[in-house]
Image (tube, rainbow, N blue to C red; front, side, top):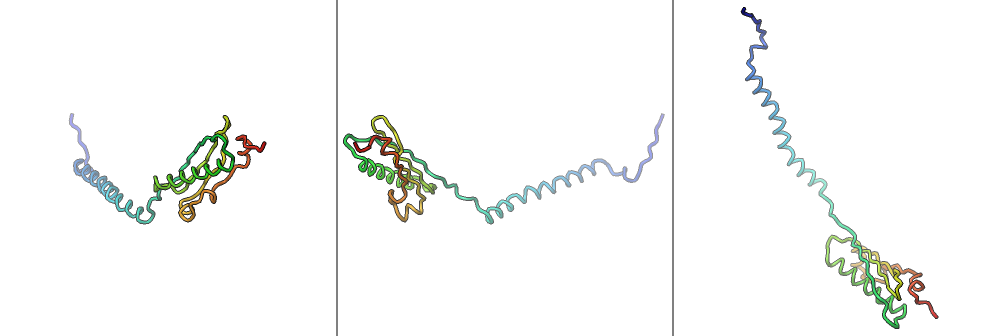
Length: 149
């Protein structure tokens, strides 16, 4: 038994030719896609470069009360420690834009924060004074047993 097939004009093109055309159609968009990524990346970096990764340095300091030390001397030592820590933080890392320092004092087993120093690099550059940028905790005197007796 023999079968007879009617060939339509579109079925005369061999499958090999169709597959080659299909392969070229797939390759062209791939080449365009891969070739355009680098110029698009360069253009985006030129228009909007990446921001600098800056951050705040946080330092917690603890100092001990010396024997026969009064509150004002303790406060002066805390300011000096905060000033040194702020300067050291800015000197050690150029990406630090702000410094936040909390100085706590230990006195007869009690520990309490005595001052907090929060300053930005431009502020510190114009005036590196711990007293100017410090916030003092008023209740620290009584919490650390510095009450006048």
